[in-house]
Each structure stands twice: as C-alpha cells, then as structure tokens.
Image (cartoon, rainbow, N blue to C red):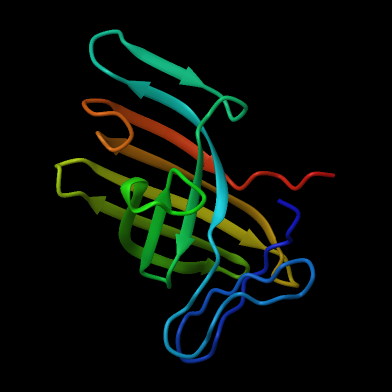
Length: 160
C-alpha cells in the first residue's frame, strides 16, 4: 500500500475523501460519498470454547478490507473484491473529536445471529495526511461459527 491517505471536511456536511499520493481524489461530494476500499491488518485472540483459543500478531493475522460509504455506513470484507458472501455491512458514525483527530463506531447484527462492533481512532496532520488509524473489532460468529474474536486492527504501514 503505497498511497498516502488524506482526509477532508466539506462545509455543510461531513465528507471523507481519500487522496492517493498521486493526488487522485476518490471521494464524491455530490450525493453519496464513494471511497475505495482499503486494507487493514489484524492481531488478537479468537475464543472457541473452554480453553480453545488462538492468539496471533499482525504478521499472522487475517487481512481485512474496509469500505466507508459515508460517515454512517461501513463494510468489512474478508476479500479485496468484497464478495457478498464474506462482506459485512455496518451502521455507525464517524466524527471529528478534536482538530486533526476523529473516531468511528459501527455495529452489525447479521441475519444468522452473528454480530460485530468496531471502534477506531484516526489522526491527520495539518495537510490532512493520515498519521494514524487504529481500532478494535469484536465479533461473535462472523468469522468462525460459535467463536468470539477480539481483534486490534490498523492500516498497514507503507513499504519504504
């Protein structure tokens, strides 16, 4: 992931725009907001009953893909192409918490009874380039039936 991400705020309503290092903007101010999916890496624990649990780090964790439809609709997918079988829609809110900082909270209750919640923080510098994006995802039965996962996630660091 070689792109530099930038956030922008539009007057009248919140708008999140991602700008690549080449300067190409992916957000749309008119109507709905379209942002390309981005990769997140995970680490954490998966509990599957009794003493059956697995711990893994960022190097061995599952790569997920996130999409921000606007400041209230989000998707998390297990595949880069957002296959409907492995894509989970979430409803929530993203907002600014301070100058150059913000947060997002979102949840999903799926038809099969599985559920997930995400909470994340992000920070940008004075040029709106993202300096940090980290969060937590807690799910029950989404990734593995009958199991709980407590994951931390982050945007992978650009290759240098």
